[in-house]
Image (cartoon, rainbow, N blue to C red; front, side, top):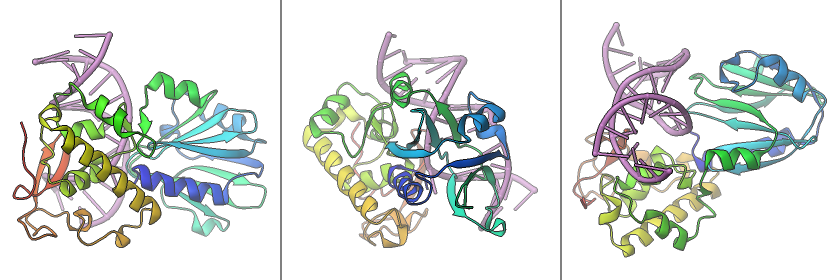
Length: 263
DNA sequence: TGTGATGTTGAATG
DNA sequence: GCATTCAACATCAC
């Protein structure tokens, strides 16, 4: 779930539940997802603090504390948040649990353990050091075009590179390629400016729509590839069969009949 | 029961 | 020094 719109939905959830109340305790049930800090230091760094605000950049969610430090939540493939009071509602794969003064808990659930949580002195320094790109919702067309110059890899790989654009993941990248009728394995520098502009605008419209729907997939239009991703199925526009292949190292769905390859 | 999965990373290669 | 590719990571669900 966690690409830009999904992480944004989690930000809204976090903001609606966990802000502005004192953290009474922190339970680290599995320290595997803690990065660069041990469970004890993480717990003692948070108890008594409150989350005052959140900031999302791409797929990274920063929760700022009273003391100006930030907890960084990255959801990996399967990270989720759950706010609950009754321990019977504890999520099955809870790895970290924050307990608040209202008696509720915020559980960080993650079956696959690809998520990562850190305690940062400065989120700005972290973003800088990591060279995390501009959020897809804030990128301008001019910067997008400038970034694409001289790129010799696939358009899909380019869209997925968080150093260039923060927030696009595997599924939205496929959707952008489908809607723009461009084969995901097309080489970036073989695409015309008009096509790159189309990719940019389509990326923005897809992300905006997904944000508006709070990343609820059942509300995505039926003419999107989204809910039809299945090898051999007929594409929503009935232009051909959906094919699956490894592109840019990721499982990719596309329609060869509809999406032209430029190489 | 083997296979694949919404992500990132570091090493290897170009 | 960059850009790109690829395997590895951990575990569960189908």
